Amino acid sequence: MKMASNCVCAVRGFWVVFLVLLRLSCAEGQMVPALFVFGDSLVDVGNNDYLPISITRADLPPYGVDFPTKKPTGRFSNGKNTADFIAEKLRLPTSPPYLALISVGESYSSSPFLNGVSFASGGAGIFDGTYGKYQQYITLTKQVEYYIAVHENLVQHMGSSGAKKYVAKSLFVIAIGSNDILDYSRSSDLRKQHTPQQYVVLMASSLKDQLKHLHNHDARKFVFAGLSPIGCCPSQRNQNKTASCNEDTNSWSRMYNMALLAMLKGLKSELNDISYSYLDTYTVVKNFVQNPSAYGFTEVKAACCGLGNLNAIVPCLPISQYCPNRRDHVFWDPVHPTEAAVRILIDKVFHGSPQYTYPMDVQQLAAVDV
Image 1 (spheres, one colour):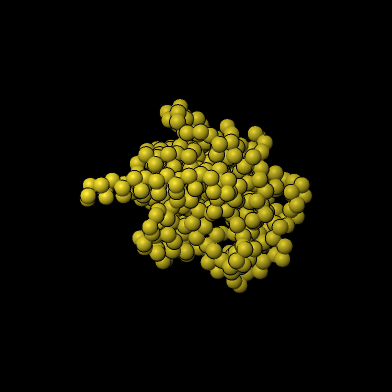
Image 2 (tube, rainbow, N blue to C red; image 1 turned 120 degrees about the vertical axis):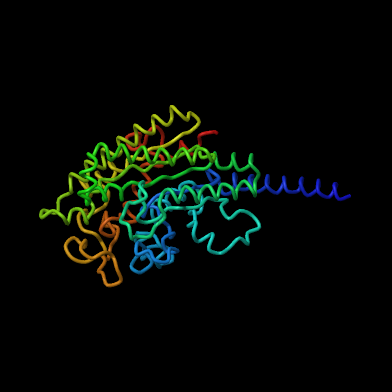
């Protein structure tokens, strides 16, 4: 009788997992089972709020002023960010911060990661030492380690085969590298050690190592956000008397994007079961800056929130002034775009012109059968 009971439980467990997967694949027409997000403050949805001594956080107003709750959420934005809009397009809920999920303990009857999770952390770079020795953030290495722990959790709940199929159909968003370029721009030691070309190739090579770890744990479909013209953000413009873009920083961003594309082509030849979409963030944002009226912007140099020249001397804090119409501005604070700018960006790369995505857009990637 005990053996029969165990068999019944096993069959019941199988069908529970099957029905969960079926529900996930069909729920509200979502395009993929889950979204796993890695990166920096451009896609952080609140992980840094759970780091006890981090000063790189967006947990005070006026951050979140245009978010549905009208409150700070840990996003470095006046509202939603890239991770939110990609999830919306995929008809998924925003992937929650990993540290928020594990902070409530292990009392889940099913995996808490079924719709995905975000490991992104403001301040993170491809290199572990990016953004200074004394800042607290989740390094990319640690983000990948956290994902491997999530993968193990999914295997426990779904079985090895079920987790493999689930993860392989999911999307992995990688938005990182800006802090590495900013680190290079402000470090004379780094510039002495590496030429710009050497540095960006090392960035791409280091990222490749992490991608292989993800691939070893069933990741197959990747979205890569190229670097924007970082030299045009208010904090960089503020370094020039004319408030013009820092062309050195912009050139390094372009160089990294080229190195990233070359690395991805090589990786595809090594791992032919992966698919990816590269988002040409540089061109889209450069168009905002050069032809703002075409996109509804009137201010491309100054930040909406901050103090001092271009609102870039003092960062966005409760004492800072902020513009009444955030839709007019490309930049929310000295380094991050407004919700309006990000919304237009994702509209263009999710299902749009081939000039902005390579070799396919995000919607096409979501539809790839694995």
